[in-house]
Length: 424
Image (cartoon, rainbow, N blue to C red; front, side, top):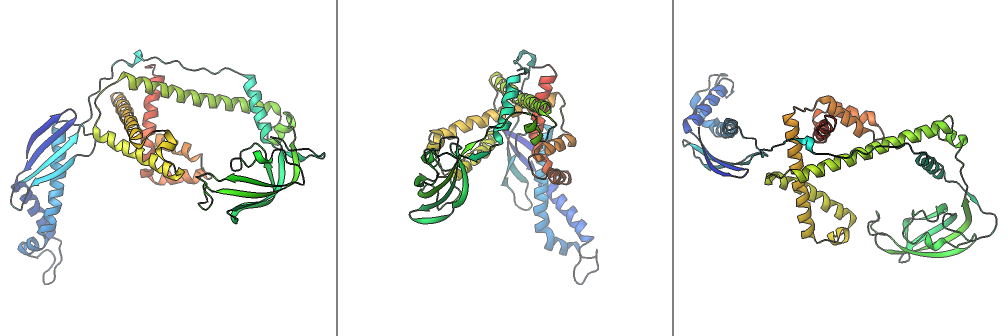
């Protein structure tokens, strides 16, 4: 095998590889001999078919298999001998071959950059600390009480105010035609909750029990029902009752309704949850700050193929989100598509650079991912489903599915190494 490097520019490498026809032919003949021992053909006993007949019938397909395998093994050998680290799968192009001639092909690839990590202890971050705050605990208890919304009928005649609730019957029409899902009887609506289409609740402020109103509004452009999306509607509303909100006291009785022995136990739970939320937010801020510092600190060439691959993933999701929202780039971002594309390419390059940097830190410090790491990540992910055990069993029985967690788990382990090891 002859290997000639024809291009070495930045991270790009190009090789011309020539495999002698004698090597290809020897491989083909060896495979044909193997086939001759097992092939069955009418008129011949197994293993007794003449090699000439085997060659005539099977050589074309065997030759294709041999060429594919030869390219795979010879290109891999060329890479290993030169101790190259390809960023992506090399591109192969056969430049010259016919039966009986040498096999010539071109191999294009980008290699991973050499990254000098240096002394990361020079990077410093301020770690947020949590302080016990009774006021925040009390706010949390109040939010729990506020969630126990209960409204009672106002006996005296008065106009509804924002924060009140109304018991109503309503029926909506679009261009005079009633649409499914736009009518209900004995419906309690809280004024100011924003649960209806824009403008609907505001027009009911000031209404009294027994009144009939025609309320106008326009369905949002992203409304799930296409027949209504973006269209104006008229709602015939009959107000049956004006209701005011009952105050829920923060006491042992409320705690009992929430499943706790007393208010002290509920307060402890709120305090612990606030600490968990703070720790998670703190961890996220610290991680973001570290990544920002690393992005500013390290500047090196990144493989264009990896950047393009990352950009295509981001861009596909952006366009999908816009399509679902039925919005344009100008609507969503105030930018043109060309401006947005340039911005997301920068994001893609930053992600690739940080990914390569963290990968190199992990490689140099022998940070590995075990199956238990992936299972723990799967367990955490499964918590968001209605049947987490079933989801976890799926991942346990499908090792390939676990691979989706490898990249984020590796990133977290490297960052934890940097934090806990005192490097940052």
